[in-house]
Image 1 (cartoon, rainbow, N blue to C red):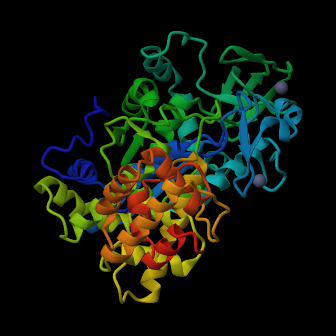
Image 2 (cartoon, rainbow, N blue to C red):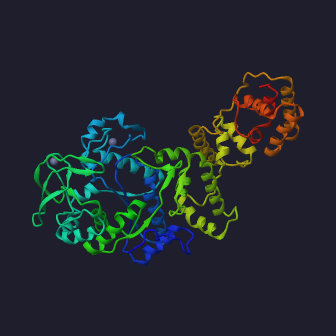
Image 3 (tube, rainbow, N blue to C red):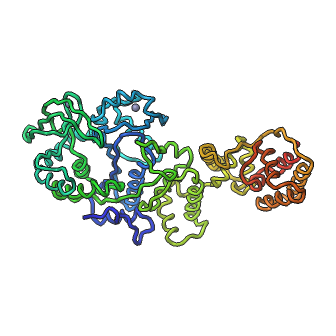
Length: 544
Ligand SMILES: [Zn+2]
Ligand SMILES: [Zn+2]
């Protein structure tokens, strides 16, 4: 038995993907090496689905780097039946809508049918399954991962699954026997095939006869249990070919490995406890081949809660890419898949800071322990498109400060003054560095955090008492003569307030009123220190 939890335990490798690649290489696989993932196109593809894609991607890259030819295949399990309606759907432009905004009644009438036989609720693709597969394809393209999507429906219809179906039905006693070790309700009557009813289109589980020579089964369309619900059958009795139906998932998965020649497959914990142990046994004992190298990954949570399409707690890759550069998102998946992680939108600044450090380590600008340096050396070139050129990076929270103004010149000036943009940088480099501002601004607005303010470009209408006015003038004077750095300026604000008997909180409030036309804002010292002194001095003096 293979231990899917053990795969990718790093051992002597700094990068887990190299440890997995070692295990694959040890089996001396045929070229091209095939790496697979898969998903049911049941609803909006979200960040959680990217575990399947990105874990496979890094293993594929590690193998390619060692000179192997690798295909990264992704099966869309679109012959599965729709069992329940998702709470959220998305159109091809990623507008996420509730079930109430589409014809939910029409969808409801299709429970029990394969995704590829249900009309697209948005009317733009061939089917419900094709629609959500298209969204997945678009997200993979946005992250720059070249996956080959394989439709399960297509595997049946084209006949590529014929041999696997025939084999399982021919050896159904062995199949019953092996599956019974994993599932209680498997008895002698069990037939590992669901036929699609010619009358109503539902997948039915009642098979009354098998004709291996003709390649058909006889069925009765009876009720099917789906979770707590029952999907009603129409009672029709008919005959279906091996292409007009499907294997149950526990047989279908090994059939995919066999038919597609899969060498490695990552999966979540649900499969590790359920269909992996049975799939492994079915591969060996029913089909007679060695299953692929397995790897279990931990799920992550979104803002502390489980990611779920059906419950509606999800973030799409499209949304993530409005908040982060694609290389930061890729970096997130270089982390150890064995650790449960939270994708905390409020603290995305930490993830970006961590990425920036990873990048500095790669370029030898920051010391790191040996293992971290090795990891950066190995994984960084897989995360960025160009690992030769060192990009200029403005720290994410500072980019959020720059997002308080739309004035490009002011942004550049502030970034230069704070030391985050070297003087003399080429325009293209500056533009690339400034791109992060849009991400950070979107983050500030979305989380409504301490950076969600707008710089008051004209002097707001203000009135201060004499003590505050004097203190503001003195602060202007100090900035004009000393040009303090951010810490010194923060200290200067406190001292100026105390010296003039202005309560510190009120004095900060005066600053926020002048610069943001708000009652509160980010740390005032660093914020003012980054801006042009002449502008700050003029504003503190209420001159413009
Ligand atoms: Zn569509
Ligand atoms: Zn029927």
